[in-house]
Image 1 (cartoon, rainbow, N blue to C red):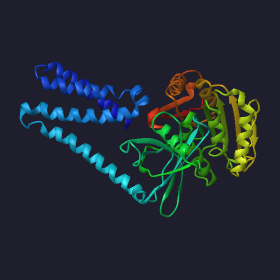
Image 2 (image 1 turned 180 degrees about the vertical axis):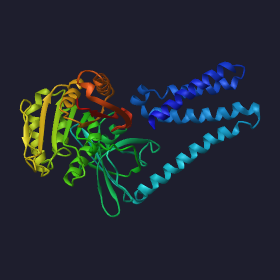
Image 3 (image 1 turned 90 degrees about the horizontal axis):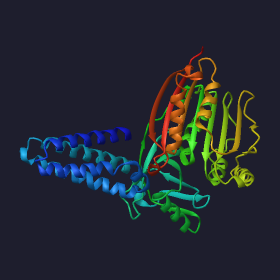
Image 4 (image 1 turned 60 degrees about the vertical axis):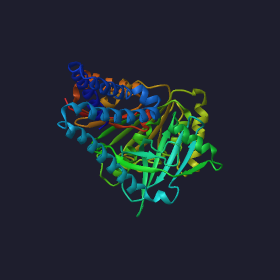
Length: 426
């Protein structure tokens, strides 16, 4: 939907240019076009990425200005074109009405008091964990995201998108867990709120809208490769745990899962390894290979391992980590499965990661590739997918499908990319 929205805006902008060039004698047309072009150009990536709060306000103001000027522009034709303009208004009002209903359905109990808890770990650049209790029971799916509003803040009109990391469902409500990195803007304000709390835990009132997004049926594929960069790990976590759960009850054909996580801050790795990734075993018939690549703070490798181990014990999750040069397999529930974690220093090459997974396909096995991370990293993986298709071992790749959805935090534009690679036996 995000891509559809952007392309509709681009097409509309160019149509407006063509129309205005042909009808420059109508001054109002040029003015409306000016607002429309500013509206379009203000939505480009650098502005959305670095000044999301500014982008949100100007986006709304320019959209309303453009629509108002369009009403004024068509007055020379009487009421002949008013129906089209009012149609735009009707679509916008209907969209807002439905979204308000969704927010009220999930958050009506927030009127009575705080419904969320927020904690921060790992210093100023560490992770923020937000736990929200919804007002009704619902069941999210891996890959979906929510819009989070903070009505008691100085910017109650803002909403930010976060991918669901995990959830717990009871009889009357659902507890949603979000994991996010500290960036500028909303997440920085969240961290300051936690830092001011004496207990290190901030209670707050939030409104939740969702869930949105498409979930991919990766459990239908024999091999799965997850690529995560930074806080993009949030996109992979629910899929990983869903595969483990499905395999335990025999509703999954996946035999091998490989998670490659590239992270700058060692605090990220310490925190997530000891909590969300603290798997004590893999179910029968499922091999799990977790590879953590730390690209900075290389001098703290040993303390990182020791700290992750101590945190894992504190959370009652045994999680012995290997050294950076040794791969260690943990005990699994069956001799037919294994769980392996490896800590490595340096940034992996996406092409090599993909080729390694392709070469391990046997017979008619299929491979699903999901990646979530910074733009450059996703470009490298996308290029590797394209290069692999039809060349060398890539000749065995029969089909490539790609889809996209929102990633962990909206204003970082981390995108979740999904490819299906079908291996054809020669």
